[in-house]
Image (cartoon, rainbow, N blue to C red; front, side, top):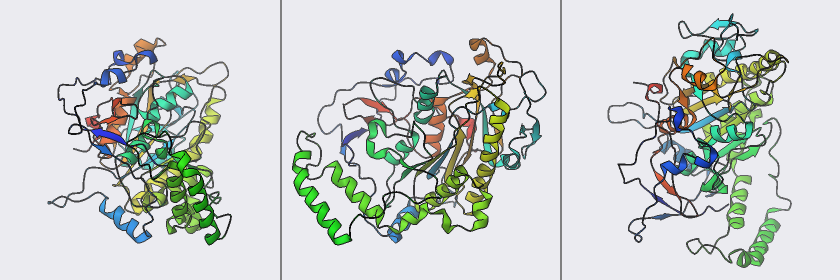
Length: 475
């Protein structure tokens, strides 16, 4: 759909106070969302201060060769000394919906009161262990940065998912865009397939928010099956006649009451139709078809929808797609925690390890940012049903690729944490808040987090309210 025209204004006031995202006192209730502290209303004095920019996203009808050339021109470049650019081009999000247990994955405390039935195994990072549920990932941990000190004040699934996917806590006055939507908004490409894709999306998919519904993720199911609605219901000539009649009948009505700064010669249904037609006839649509990969490659990723989704993500990134999110749900282990977490880990471990290896083999690792995590962790204490409950203080997130450090572990949690939430917050070493994680990812993608965007209702918003964690970058 055609996006709203909005003014994009560079931040000019160097005196705006920076928020210390790692300070627990900076978190407020939803009525006191930090977004109010990060905004500054300004007097707009004519067109010399604000510049209107109409966003054109996809559906340009260029050939596959042109798309490849465009992708190559926007890939990480080399400077005059021959060094690679310090930003990633694309983003792959492995989303663990439900709250994976840090204790059964990346931060085991085996043999302690909170360790449960998990065992710890050595990794390719000296003196660092992870759970025995992730043996393949353990061998490749030196390719990644492991953050063991994520903290949040959202313990509800929906609110925490919103927080992790957007980098902001919920605000009743607007909907924040997901990180994939921000990436697509801040970049441009000439490809004929969606630039923002979610595979196996659940009830809270990645959204475009105030940046526009055209930046919502394109949702698809198991890549083993065909994409729906790709064939025209009529022969091409007849289909074009139908579309022409549709445009002539409804376009005039659809343009009534639209904003004056919008293109009145086009409406959202026309743009959406044009993009759909371009996608249906594009050779790039083959990127969704994992059957073009060898059986040996498909087997390595695991015979699961999630594994196939990870393989499809690589194919889409190769074609120029900016962000692919693959969801693996089922982590909400209030009962039978060890069994449920172990079953999920078996799927994740195979797919994650294969993803890292394949990106490296296809020379995509340095240009792709990978992030793996969920909305929160699980409680150190095991409940009466043998489960672990929601725990947003001291959970784990794994990051890899792009300019992110290799073979680094950030933060630590206590083997005997306090049951008092405030004390436990202080027990987490080198805390990383959700806004700071997002600021780090955006910096790794080469996006200016301090840029202001004016929303359709005239509200200025920063792309992030956090600050990048310097320790997570090389050098």
